[in-house]
Image 1 (cartoon, rainbow over the protein chains, first blue to last red):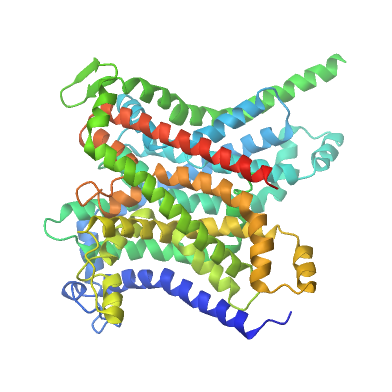
Image 2: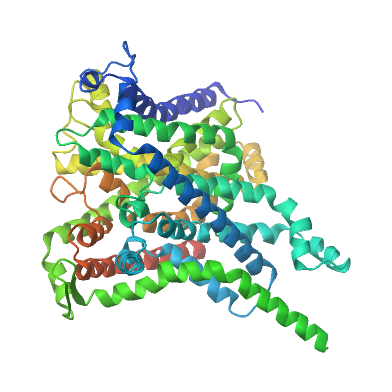
Length: 277
Length: 296
């Protein structure tokens, strides 16, 4: 399809503008993390560092208990996503395949729970966790991490199952396979791409979750994103942008890599979750 | 006959078993606590003094006199309307860009997805630093181009703008993907026949693309609006509601009252106000949807 010069220019110009707007701040964060402390507070900004240093990272590891934060993040995210996706698949399958009384009501409730402001249920939830003594606890936190992906996941799985022909299961049934057998041998392989997508999307969301650990885990069970808060609280003078940018870079880079590697899947997953009819 | 009934019952039982974990989690973590929030809003419930006294509507009256809360209400609405409008406009443009088949397409998609993938506190704290009047990135560039260095966090108007801009940066990519999905659902035939009638690029965009995606945009707009109004992570990371209280969202106030002041009763009351706001937005949104559907 022949495209006019004008269209081409607009397209490439827009690409350039978008890239700069999104990438420049990221570059600046990474830049700050390798600049010596004094040079961060300078004007005008030195865009190419002349004396890069890893000192900020060393300071970061001294200021925060990074291994602990990392472990907490990993446990909550991995468990949260695993169970969250599992429950979503179960729920999605049930809603899609089985016509049972009350299914619409239950689905409506699930969707309603998504719209409810998370902050508004803060207080009672906080109270509940306190009375159960799971406030500053990795496992208590995990419960909330499982809770998060459920609405989105169930919806995506529901949509996905709707598209799989019932004939697959029916032919398995005719050959005498029970429910569990059908699920694992026939459905599972077809499910893999959808689950992979869901896992990636949920993983990104869960690992980066900030509000939940901020409130429900104050000291011992906090996760990496909350590390920012600890850093800024620990310094009495200015915001410690040297260590914060180091932490920022550390949290940034893996996800940029994930995005580059999995862009296709992520796009599909988010789009599938958006078809709200 | 009997055998079929039993099989049917087994199926229904299976359905409930499958659905139960999801439902149990959501009910306990979201729906059930909402009811309690409603109750707490009528109490003077403060952890510090260990008070827990029923005071009826006193909390509600207190809210109407509380300047900070009223400011939050105003800002919350302002923030959400401006931010979502900008996100929609930019989202449509970005989606249109991603819809083109050109060499840099994959690059645009990847870059566009990045803000979604990084954690909110990074975006927030970085934004705070980026908008720093003396050493920030924004002022560095502004100075090089126009010789000005606005005081982003001293002036209320500028502070609000910076929060909106950070929010747009972080969330537009997600929205643009949804809009892209809608655009890709448009029947290509329409474009072809329009081309044959001699329509240029702009004409095609305004007469075919926009009207087709309008329902989707309205639906998405409602969801995004409600979502932004109820989130406070960005404000927390960027400004802690400052300077003063000009950039605090209602949801941020809920957090403050509960976790910082331990004033659970009052916090719950603010939550109820937020519920009402969300409810109103939902109703307006539905009305808007209906109006659009009718005019087709």
